[in-house]
Length: 377
Ligand SMILES: [Zn+2]
Image (cartoon, rainbow, N blue to C red; front, top):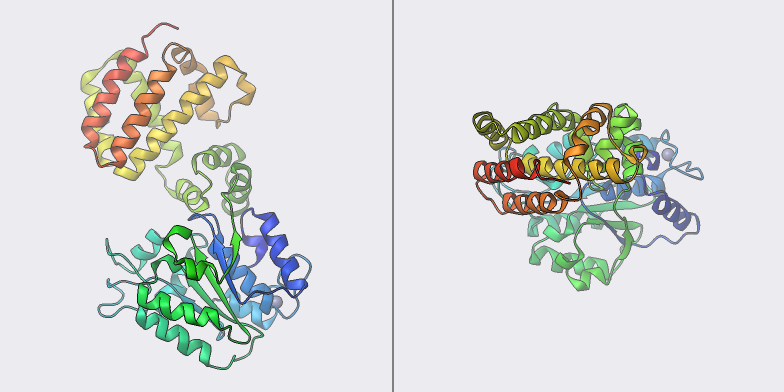
């Protein structure tokens, strides 16, 4: 992984490169940031950079023998540790080592990913994946060996929050006494779930949320999608690039949200109860995650209507199909109904997250929308 393959975070990249050039390489670092914002990728690109035989001003070379091994995720001095659980891939006493084949396969087919993708990949269902005491024994074993060929041996721990207490305590000892030519790169998401004693022993590299403009650029670059679609998805993905990629790749993602939303609003306006019931059935089958996304999508469309009405259509951030719908639909959304609509959508959103029965929640919302769409400006 080279820095150039990571979406956004220009300042962090620059800071990391400068720290290497001025020989300020801390033996234990925590790459901290939300899921899907690239902190794992940043740690890996950093590891590749510090070991590159011919690094340049902005990146590792990508072609030396170390870089090639890093790109293939098979370097003898690159050690990964990550949460594991019993599943289809391993039946007893799971560890990172036992899942190493699956891990490499996983990294090769997912440039960006989240914990849920990994758990799916190893067929662990609903089980909580953790980093256990056997992993900590393997970590200690790996640092006791001499480096095979590179300047720095890397121990990259993904989700250190998931180290159980036995593992955390062992790792703490290791972090206290730096091992020569070994770098610990922790890739974490929530500092409140890490032991303060661990936090005090690492240098924290903080990665903020990705900006919509960075996500847009990343989508155009990696997925080659049209600019207006990239723009629209970037605004939906909450600074999470994994989420943005999911929206692009789901055939029934954003493109179909507009169709579904348009149909729904038409049925509410014409108060067609029978068809509304069918529509609610369809939404019910989508599952909780998409229902939540759909409500967020609706909120965005209402905001765009207000911008169209009260600011200027030139400020709208919509792709073509949405813009055509927005032009006609905006006249039904105004100062007289926008607040109750937003509060209803937000309330339904919370209920869905709290496991409310979706059919009922969406039917209630639809009936209230029937009245609200008819209200006077
Ligand atoms: Zn190189």
